[in-house]
Amino acid sequence: MNSPEGLSMIWLIPGFPILAAILLTLWPTDQRRGAAWIGIGAMALSLLGASIAFLAIVGAPGEEGLVRWVHNFLWFDVGESPIKIGWLLDPLSAVMLWMVTFVSLLVLIYSSGYMANDQRMVRFFAFLSLFAGAMLGLLISNHLLVLFMCWEVVGLASYLLIGFWFHKPSAAAACKKAFITTRIGDLGLLLGLLWLYRDTGTLLFYDGGEGCLEDRSIVWLAGLPGMFGMTAT
Image (cartoon, rainbow, N blue to C red; front, side):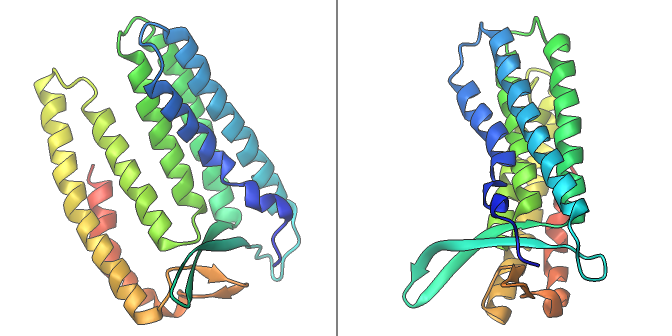
């Protein structure tokens, strides 16, 4: 199904919290209330965007009830081979977008009160915004390399959040364990991507309404260690 013009702006859903994370890394540590407003405000905008996307995709007519919107664009050229990336929205990803933004907003609101007197609250909000933004980017990616990059940022943010209170031995040990586990899993996922690209010549899920990887699903088995590595954290 042809995608609406607005789909090209769907990157703003993960873009808001990622921008908030960047801003909060530069934010004065003593301005905790302002940091809370930045994190919560950015996530509220993402929730609004996710709600609009959800209502649009659910209300769109589709063949046999299936609606899938794809927006691909040129990233760069390698010789005569154009490399395209893009965004993908279907009912499942729309539901997940709404769920992630809603839960993340609740966590940020709760954290603004729970950590009101914590001297490192600004950093926590930066880490959490980065985690949510990367997760949202993963959900809308139509390209496996972009998905992998978002996956790596999710792993980094998880490591930072798990070890946030690094002065506690239990937190320090847990973040080290998570880091080692995810790196092993990520290696398996990367090998799976390389194998898939060699086999198909593309890392796009869909291009021009046609599935690019649907008949190569067996190669996903190579990426299972990466999935297990992330869930083990």
